Structure formats: C-alpha cells, structure tokens
Amino acid sequence: MKGTKQKILDTAERLFADSGYTGTSMRQIIANAGVNLAAIHYHFGSKEELLDGVVARRAGPVNEERLVLLENAVAAAKGRPLTVEEVLEALLRPMVAVARQNEQFVRFMGRLFMEGLMPHIAKRHFHQVMVRFIGALREALPELPEQEFQWRVHFMMGSIAQTMCGSPEGLNLLGAACGFEERIDRLKRFLSAGFRAPGE
Image (cartoon, rainbow, N blue to C red; front, side, top):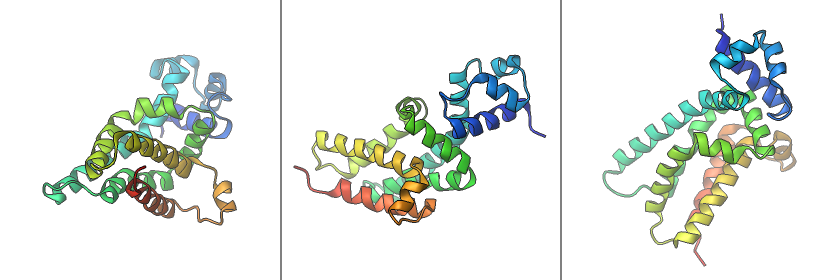
C-alpha cells in the first residue's frame, strides 16, 4: 500500500506529464491523490518543492549510476585520460533504464522542456554531476580552445534534452526508431563526432 508521500509524487508526476507544471493546480493534485492540503504542505511545503521532489526521485538514482560508471571508467583507464566516448557512455547510458521503466516521467520531463523550465531543473538537480563530466570531457579534448569547448557542451545539453524529452511524434516524422537504447546510441555517435570535429 502506497504511503501518502508516494501517492502525492505519483499523482503530481502524472498530472504534470498530462497538463504541464503551469497547467496543473495544487487543488487538482490534492483531489486526484485523495489527500488534504495539510499533507501536501507537510511533505513538500509548496508546488515548487513538489516539482523538485518529482524530479529528484528519478534523477537521483540516474546521477548516482552516472558517477559510479565514471569512476569505473577512470579506474579501468589506469591513469590515462578517458576518451570522449567513455565519458559520454557513463553520462548517457543510465538514462535508458529510467526512461524504459517510467515513460510517464519522460513525458513529464518533456513538458518541462516545452515550458522552458529545464534550465531551472538542470541547475538544481544535475549541475554538480555535470561539472564532473564536463571536467572529464575537457581532459579528453585538451587541444580544443576553451570557447569552442563551451559551445560544444552547450550543444550537447540541448541535444540530450531534445533526444530524451522530445515528442515521439517528432522522431517518427524522421523515420527514426523511438527506443531509448537506440536514441542513446545515435546520440553518443553524434556527440562524439561533434566534440572531435576540428575547431575554427
């Protein structure tokens, strides 16, 4: 039997995925979860904190796995800098399992992307992990001028968001399979080539 906090998180995720964050009221969440306002305030305090809670319960395990994979890759490299492909594999692969198991969460993140909330979410939930990965990418590309490197990181972040959170309909129009494993494989090849391309 689900606890109150779990029911609130599940309901908020579903409603945010269906109607968007701005299009969902706390009143709707309360009604659909079958809880009272006091329960929402007890567990989360505000709608923004509830949003953070919905993201954190999925993003936390993904970030933990990313760091484990990165540490394993560093250990296996035995002192040499990681390759671009090794860094990207550790960054991207953990998203596959959570996306497969929680397609509602993928739709939810897609809604946040469309509403322009992704920069806020990224700063709160992914910034510290991304610092580690960007540092590893920088070590893999010492010859790339700093400004050029930063532009490519910028393009990488947009590509990840679009690939994982973009609408399946859009991918179907490209004639591309929508499986998350294939999305990640294609994205890794694309980003690896982009990072390795000659600078200006």
